[in-house]
Structure formats: C-alpha cells, structure tokens
Image 1 (cartoon, rainbow, N blue to C red):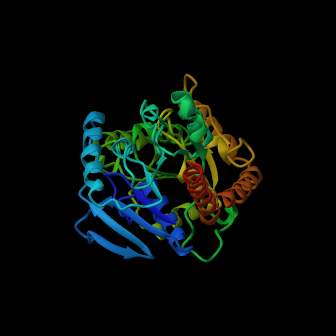
Image 2 (image 1 turned 45 degrees about the vertical axis):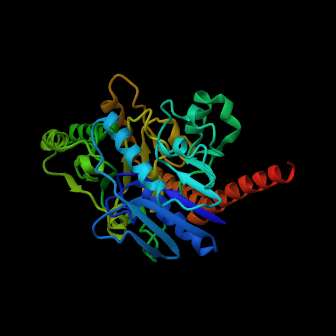
Length: 383
C-alpha cells in the first residue's frame, strides 16, 4: 500500500518542537513502513533537516512552514499557503492522510489518492465542505459525534481510531507508586485552555495543609511559537505559585522522549485540567502517564471518557462548576490521602493503556485504509 501523511505547517518531524500529532504520526509511519508499506511524510522544513531523506524506511519531504501565530485568521491563511506548497511534492498514492484545514478542499478533484481526514481538533464548520473525503477519522467518540452533528450527510464516512500511546524507550518497568516521590505532574502546553492556572491555584491553596509534603511539577512550553500561552501567562502562573513555598517547579518544555518519560515515571499523580471544550480531542498526555504507571486525574471533557472511568482507570473532576479550583483541590486531596486507592487506579490505568499500543492502533489504521481501497476497487469493477 502507498500512504502519504501530510502534517501541519507549524511543527516539524521528527518532533523536535513537540506536537502530539507529529509525535503520533512519526511513530505510526515507521510502524507502517516496518510492515512493508510505502510511506511518505510531508512536514514543515527546518534548517537542521534536509528537504528529503529516508528515516526508518519512511521517505520525508519537507516544505517551508511557519511559527504558529496567535490570530486564528492568520493561522488559517498560513495553513493555506503551506497546503498549496505541499501540492508540489505530493505523490500519487492509495491513501492521503491530512490534518491541514485546506488540503481536503485543494484535493477535492485530485486523482492523487483517497482523502483521509485526520480530525485533530473539534470541527468548526469545515467538515461539511469535505464531501470528497473518503474518510473523516476521529480520535475519540466525542469528536465523531461532533463531526456527525456538523455533517450528517457524511456520517457513514466517519471512523473512530484512537491515538496510540508512545512506546517506552526504557526497558525496565516503571517503579510502583509506593516508591515514587510525592509529585503531582502536568505535561502539556502551558496555555490557559489547558487549565494550568486551575492546577497551580488548587495546589497552592492546599500547599501548607493537605499538599504540605507534595511538589507540583509543570512540564511544557509557554512560548507562543510552541502553542503556549506566552510570557505573560507564565509570569502570572509563577505569581500564583508564590504561596507554595517554592514547591511548584516550572520545568519548561522537554522534547527529548527519554527525559520526558522520567518525569512520568517519577510522579504519583498526573493532573490534566484541560478547559478546551472545543479543542481537546483525545488526550495523549494522560494516556502516556497511565502507560508509565501514574494515577491520572482529568477534567470532565467527553474525549477523556473513552479511556478514563472515574475511580476505576483514573479520576475526573467537574471543571464546569462555579468554583473549579475548589473542585480540583477537593478531588486531588481525596485521592492522595488514600494510597491504596491511588495504587489500584494507577494499576487499572496501566492495563487500560495497553489497549492503545502502537501495534494495535496501527492495525486499526491499516485495516481502515484497506477497507477504503477495497471499496474503491469494487466500485471500479462494477462500472
């Protein structure tokens, strides 16, 4: 099978600047190539990478992209420019996977391959224009429902295939919770939509009582070019953390995978208080924390419910209440005082994460690709 993956304008591959989508497809494409498929990845060019190269059997084409702007209108314009540029290197294949906004429209009359739209964000009106797409693939059932509501005529073309959990670079098992430091961890973009301020406030308010012997570690970029909330937001977070007596540690971005794994493996509780009602589509970071044996607590977004059940495989707090800081603080306090509960849920979460292994998710994608090819072949034979 010939497969091309067109990634976005703002993050390169390999994912040296982060980017959950880039990280996911970097892994999946190598797995596809390992199984004998012909795979091309098109991504943002960077000075340190050649415009063309082969990595682990995957052919990479790189075209000039951009740093992510703050303006949504400007972002869409830059996405259009980038998508037009990708057309010049796009080969004729069986399947073209894209998560750019414009490429499904630019390819609507193309014979270069079947269009496979990877919906990495909640739909915002564009799905109904993707009538020429063979597949609208959602990473969670919540996103699938949103796509169907926006484009009911295309409902039969929707499939749900989750994101894979990144494989571990460490051959040794993660240490049990009892052997870990009392660390609450957050990994992700340091941006208001991720609710990082809720976590800092909740921890700080209990820093001298229930969290007196705990630390809070924040890992992720605040820089706007990496999708963060900017310097002003980081300064505000550090100001909020002043009453925690130096026990809130802002690590910054960690793009090195083994180093990032050490953060996951060292935490007892991972908290992901995202507020992105129309932005969060799956939650790779919580699943990755589960795979490294940490207990996970998230906000009540629908996309997390595919793999988190409250008090079973993880914990959920209601971020939609009048005082979400109080709700988060109460939930964190309730779970950390019960080591047996914390360990039981962490172990259940670890077992759940195995359902999202790279090989299992690759199986689902390849079967979906093959189903489209079989349907297309059958249609041609019946003409």
